[in-house]
Length: 380
Image 1 (tube, rainbow, N blue to C red):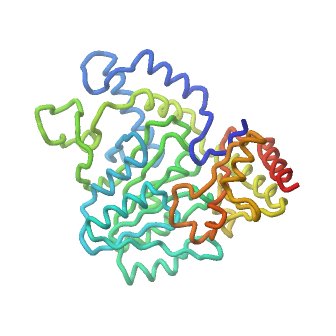
Image 2 (image 1 turned 45 degrees about the vertical axis):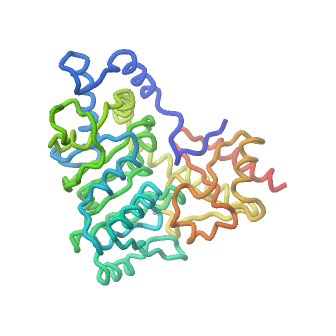
Image 3 (image 1 turned 90 degrees about the vertical axis):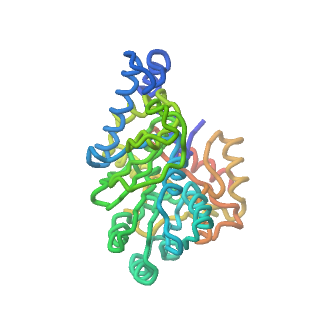
């Protein structure tokens, strides 16, 4: 199989991730924070060390809270349901948001009487219109701003720093979705004015499923959304007051955390970024030579990495993906990619969404050549 669905999850993982998870399962697969015995303390230290790695990765202060969750989706639920919303205020979201944000904020907006507005997009370039955004902010002040860093549909790198800089002029809460960026491009929490950074361990960090979360860089106050056992203050029917334990109900997934820890130890952002940029350029070059394809790319190629979406003028995306799988053993993603807003700009609904190709550090030029050849064969 040629695997080109790395925007969904990177696969395979580095070998040391598999080894670390196997070791954790066999040797420290205990309930961290629930016992004073040596192995439980070792598991707790692994959790603490992994959180330190994540703070360092985004250049956050040691006082910044790192909250582990089973996934970035659950992390967004904790944040969005935890913010102290004020009725009749406005929350801005980018047109590239994933349903982890879009559906969750839609639900809370109905409950809390919030107005949702999309960050303006230039339909010709598919890039954020910063001048129009400034005007929208002045007219309808932002209470909170959610912005994905890299689109999981088109690979567009959004100008998060510029967006959040404008947001902070109105003291808005700023939350970035780094699922497609953390581990691939530099993310400095201070430079981009992010209050909260949400992350997914199983994507560009090359960790496993089952571990995600958020870094509360400025320690925004959040109400508790999930409750349960924490291993501490157990006679108290309220969640404990700790900045991190307060939000980490249930047993920690020590095996997944061990995998993430190992992935972070061998992470080389500079190497990953350079390789994926070269692969992306090569992918675009190859696909651009194929008849009947339409590629959805930002105008400025410097604002693009890792992901390319396209449609075929004669085949819907679902059928094309099925042919690539069954006849050529090539795995791509088809459809709307859990991103409801952006497809009205792409005007791709008649094709049932796009075919999405996502590269990774394990993708080869030969993989891309095989995809290009398969698409040419389909045309013939």
